[in-house]
Amino acid sequence: MIDEKEALKNGVLRVAELMIVSAKTAPKARGMDNLSMVIIAEREEIEKLARKMEDLASLYGDFFKRDADTIRKSDAVVLIGCKIIDIGLKKPDVYRYDPNLVNSIVNLGIALGSAVKTASMMNVDNRIMYSVGVAAQELKIIDADIVYGIPLSAKSKNIFFDRVWPPRTS
Image 1: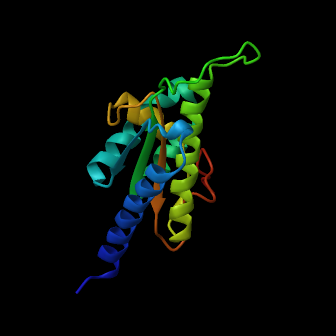
Image 2: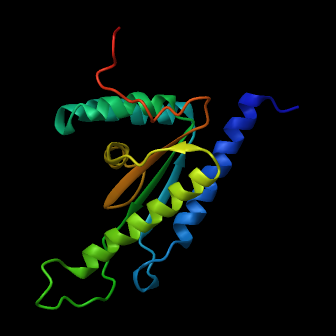
C-alpha cells in the first residue's frame, strides 16, 4: 500500500525527472548542449540550500530570505544551469554582444521554459528562481556559469502564489 504522502513525493520526483528530459530535449543553438541539471529531493539538502539563501540575503536582497522560506516548503528542487560556450558564431560589427554568450543563455531560457511547461502540464506547482541558482552555485552543487532553481510543490494550495516578505504578523 502506498499512502498519499509517499505517492505525492514519488509523483513530484517523477515530474522532476521529466522536467530534466524536457530541458535536455529543448532546442539549442546549433544543437550544442551547454546545460547542467540536478534534482534535489532530500530534506537535508533542501535545508542546506535554504540556509545558504538566507546567508546571501545581505548581499542580494531580502527576497532571498522569502525564497528560502518557500524552498523549505518545497517537495523537490530542479536546478538547471548553463556553461557559456563557443557555439561557433562569429560576431558581426553590428552586434553589441557576443552571439556565443547570448545563445548560450538563450539555450538556458528555452530549457527552463520547457521544464516548467512539463511541471505545469503535470499539475505540479513551480516557480523559476534566480535566488536558488545563486545559492546552488555558492554551494558548488552544480557546475555551470548561470543557474536557476525550480522548486516544486504538490500541496492543497500553491505555495508560490501569495508570497509576502516579511511575513504578515496579523
